[in-house]
Image 1 (cartoon, rainbow, N blue to C red):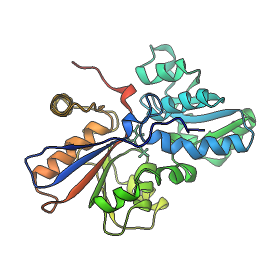
Image 2: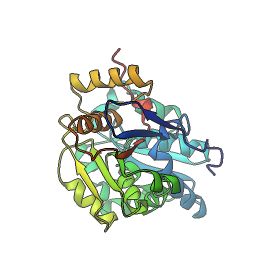
Image 3: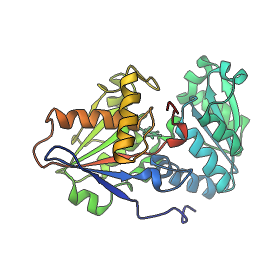
Length: 290
Ligand SMILES: *Cc1c(COP(=O)(O)O)cnc(C)c1O
């Protein structure tokens, strides 16, 4: 399973008017559908499902969840049925957005649930009930973040990445990716997360996965919250793509790059810092604004 994924991952170093060196690790290019961090998060989950002899994968997500799209593809590719519990009953009567359309096209059964029901997604009792309803399902939490995901995201950094960079940057949603990066980083490295959503609870979520302290998180570039955008963000995304020929999307990677370039300009990093930014993919959900 997963043997066909294209390795090694391409790197791209940007020319910047600064002494810092910024390199992007293009996880968006590892596979056209299971791109980015979601490949690493699903890998050991699907292997476990297979080992347990289960035939379905059930998971949770909002309308903009790249995890939902990636799971639908990976499930179909590796012979599982997939079930998506999608937040928001009202979506059932609307046209599917590109992310949900992708999931649907890969055969995912979409169940639109009320916000009240979606709130229960981490409750043991609710999960037991779902498991009874779908006895053949391997249940993966929202965003794909669990211990098996962490085992996968610890494989994102290579030995060379640990040696050649001082700072590792990534976009943060549920925290499974940054936690794997932190756990697999070397002691001299700093991991800097750019949150795609507002709030401090994420720090505590990440602390559940790691006891290391060589990391920090900022929500200063979240543009008001999850999946929210500003004109400034969309303009930044367009300029960045024109300048460097690297596609971004508005939910995660554009916010990270906008924040990172802003911090570089503010001379937040010591001179000659070597920064590696993880391009975590998600491009199927890209907003077409131009
Ligand atoms: C899901 C996703 C993230 C966030 O990953 P978490 O492990 O949930 O923090 C970042 N970038 C992209 C493109 C994603 O799809």
